[in-house]
Length: 251
Image (cartoon, rainbow, N blue to C red; front, side):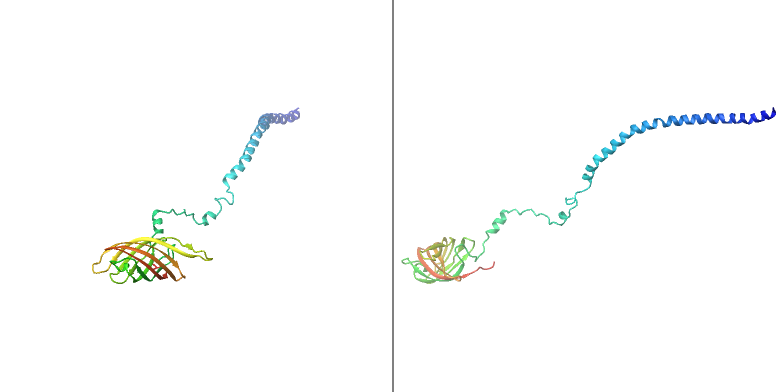
């Protein structure tokens, strides 16, 4: 009997020891079962959310790349704006510029031909003239271009009571004259100015003039002018001469 009791004791001890262990294992298994069972539901419910986020990111990515990554060749990456010369605004013509364009340039050619200096003979048309302009005398003539259409034509008629004529004339463009194959061009002019008498009682008055210039060669110009001076009396004379052309004073 003792032997039987001795054999049962270990069995009881094992039962007593193993019973709590089995209970704890059962609780652990149940707890794991409780924890594991809902997991598939959570995973299944989260899956659509993750897919939605991925889809949104995929949809937004091209726009983000387009807005953040510069396109080659645009002003962001191209070096052309850095190397090109700055655009200079067009100059605005002012009144001073327009005035500068018409400044007097003594000696320049006019539309009526080149400036010149020469000699002429005067044919007086006045009886008992008060100056040399009214009689037959020798004269020094000239034309000095001022602008494209204006010139001054100082001349001096030598003799008794020599007279100096300083008219300013308006020059017209060349006009062809004649019925030949090569018509002769002439350039008319008309104007007025001052006549200064250099006699014993030097006086001055007005002078009216008109005439034509005829280019002979590139170096010489023929001219004829009618002058009417109002000094002590009215003196009338016709000057016919030839001038040597010059290009200007370089002022």
